Length: 297
Image 1 (spheres, one colour):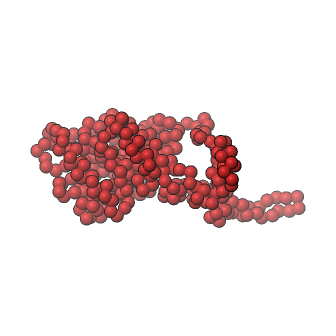
Image 2 (cartoon, one colour):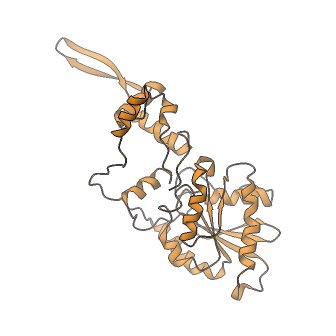
């Protein structure tokens, strides 16, 4: 396609997603309410808060954490950075600093060896020792609480720390969907020198999602992808027509179905795109990060 045609079509391409009159769907199951209550009760036994998040470090963070748990040294770990476009990393750090978050670590916990995971223990040790520990001062062991919304990699971080510091396997179950961790405040050792235990907690969403846009980002695993579907599904140009995109996916992957059509001269069987199967494949590709890098909001 010629350049002038691309520019002409780009002028008509939507700049925002039209949600219509839809309302935000809220999801705050019992184990989340129980988890948040017990987190608050256990803060006094914790030396540092590890808040785990991924590709939307602003709109996706739970404000309840800042209100009730941000009374200890705080380290924000932005995980799943293998899926992120880090060209805006400096801007993200500046904006987080304006929000009061000064200690940030970018990680990819699914890598067998991630140098940034190795930095976590020294960072946490420095944070804890630079501030008063009050009634925990006589205790030489450190206790950290891991918090975050669902499916951002809390359990993956715990396992990565055990793998890096203890040369041991999984200490926490992981999964590709939210709600895997329901146990509250499971105590797991992740380091020997110094002795560090983590309190694993279930992912907790705010009882009320602030906007449909935030809900959409969280629904897409907290990630908003760059427009690179054309490279994956051989689209000739960026498309704002979901039916066209799904049709292209169905054709590319052979997702078709046979249906009967009634005509004036009898019934015929047609092969048509299976839009449902195409949509499921598209969502799976989103979740696996196969549609390119993601934008840090």
